Image 1 (tube, rainbow, N blue to C red):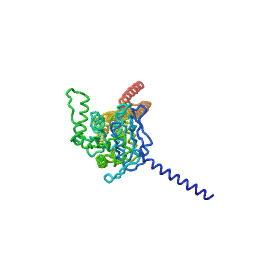
Image 2: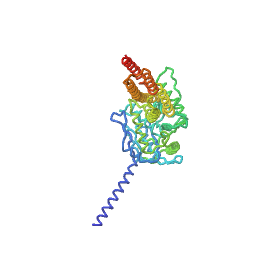
Image 3: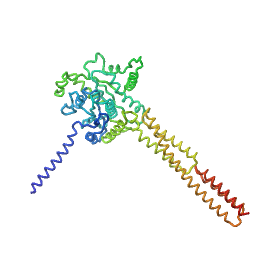
Image 4: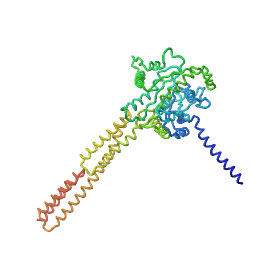
Length: 479
């Protein structure tokens, strides 16, 4: 019997141990973190993949690969992770795109970046321009990858088209909104390093950087075409962002593309293998932990950041930098509103309307100044400024009402005290006019000194009416 119990205990121990190992081993695969809704217009979170990220306690960095569908993004990621197609991200050879939404490889690559142990996640994104999707959906995928990643690999086959440049409009808007801050101040989130990856065997005597620079040159627009103007503006901004981007060329691994998954390194083109390894080194050299509002993120914080960004990008019909600006300014706005409220709360109510107005304007000025020093966004921040102004005015109205109440309460008490005093003088036997006048003057003087605020004028009028009434009564009794 004892032996049976020990066997049962040992069997349970093995089961628990095995299940623990399985849960860890399970992370060594690809997980979805973002999935499309049924209409392929908006995005939602996939909890399974988020668990793979949440468990990480180190600072996190992310490498995302974006580009047209069927351009070899998943195969490229497997190569960067030294995984076969059967181990890593799913690779599709059919006409429909294999990857839906955004996927993450569950086991991060651990790197030492400037003395900081960093967990690097690799993200695979759904390709652009596949059948049955809207452009808005593609824009949301691109926008999310742009915001989340530390390195954004723009995987392009053969050449750079004008449409490829247009897709970077969101990245440019982000740069203009978030990265144009005063040096030394915290930024909302640091920009991803943009890596142009051109998969091409021959560059016709040009370096890949020259090819990118040429693609970013202005296109003549003698007819004033609005679309060309917009793309030229993007070109200008990308040229300014040059320090934050680099270019790399990668030849085709083999002519038989549909057989790539069955080939080992020895069967691939030697030049490709050499360049691929150089690409790995390049990515490792430029990647940095994701910085959000001045600090690195662990797994749980990265997921919270993802949730925040997704909510903003799903707002409205199209994703916009404006919605992101609102998200990042929300906390700052709340702090500035609190600053205003705390300054106003120190007031000893009631006050005269002019005094309250002066303190309101000074407090509002301090709150607006604080917001101006901290806010994110250069163009879209105006909406946040307007919102702060509206919220301050709402709080001010509450102070105005509180001031009116306190003023009415104080003046009513002073008026009642005067009224009682005058009633006492009136009922005295043969009261003298001089004594009555002296009593009223003293009462009125106290009232004038102590009654303040918006109710004062109304109670002054009541005091005059009371005085006239009592004076008439006094004269009548004297006669």
